[in-house]
Image 1 (cartoon, rainbow, N blue to C red):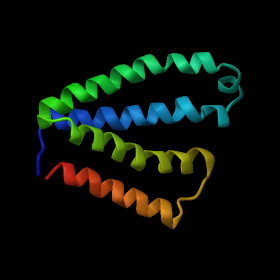
Image 2 (cartoon, rainbow, N blue to C red):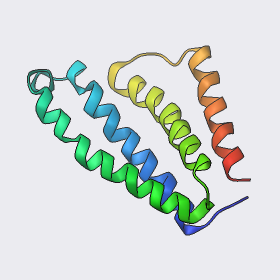
Image 3 (tube, helix red, strand yellow):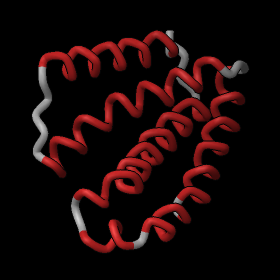
Length: 113
């Protein structure tokens, strides 16, 4: 398995960024203020973009190529989104969603071998 400091930093940044993106896009479903302030939520896009740029920087240093970073970004989103949606909105994780999460985990692991 490929493990180095840069790849660990990349995966950490990607997970944290996916969590921030979930709240940026979906907090309007939870609370009143985001629904009334979409431009304020849009401002979160600047730090989110910066974090994605950092994940690319560290990921490229760790892997030496771009594809694994893109696939890790997809996988971290597919792994975190259902869990946060379940915790915050009570939407169940169906068999279809569970299989998608499993496939995302496999995609992530494939990038690390």
